[in-house]
Length: 350
Image (cartoon, rainbow, N blue to C red; front, top):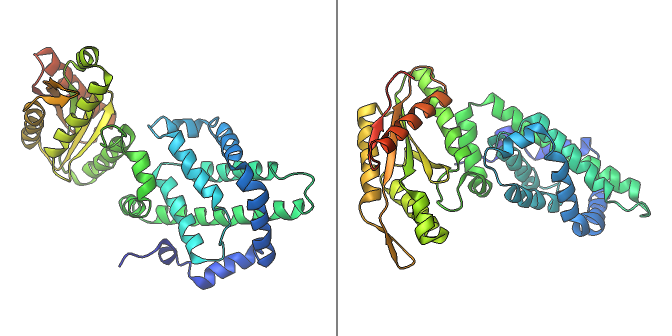
């Protein structure tokens, strides 16, 4: 049976009640939070979120995280859902569980605890900034905001501490189980439904760490659709999108569940083959190539012949990810130079 986060962290009913009592979140706070939602959060939620992201996105660390391919629109929708639920039912176990899930999702996304707590402070300030100055119980509402955000921040610290204590592999697996919706938004390319660049690179880095520890083999394949620009020029971008989607589907059909594939950029893809030496990986790459080239792709009444070129490299001991990708990319370039629709192997020395 899968344990809840509250069970994993030892936050039983007694400890939850102790946390609420410590922050003096009593019946008066419950009433104030209802007023806060009626008078402030409900009417001004979108304004608060817009101002929140205007400030947070000026932070260099936040910019770096967004550069990994995350969608600010998707994150803003998630943040809006969080804001609209802020403090509602805070004395129920479900509230604690959901807040811990949110904390784990941000750990998975690579948000540091410092940035996460800083963002809480920004959100806290923006909510308070929308409380009308003329409202009779303004001080009470401000106090309620400070208390409930402190509760949520304390639960975030619980989540980050748990992730540090446990192995990275276990932490990520549990996060994926409990944040499926957010994970899908952040890790799947909308057009091809393959992993995003950020997601597939994160997985590759994890597997390279295992290679360092165990010496297990690992290969990657860089894949590029041949003459894709001509497809767009001759048939239009809608057909180009259909080609990208179908090529992704054919590649996925040629791989096993343990083998990852992601959209690396444009018409280029990255395949990660754990526990595969060069010979076995070459067989997989040839299977991918033949699956894609087997039949033309039907799109908008047209038959579009499509092939791919592939560059294959096996990870060297202690090789950085950038070096491994560069060698596979060089092999891909060689496949293009030699006529396309072929697999080329990278030499073992960079």
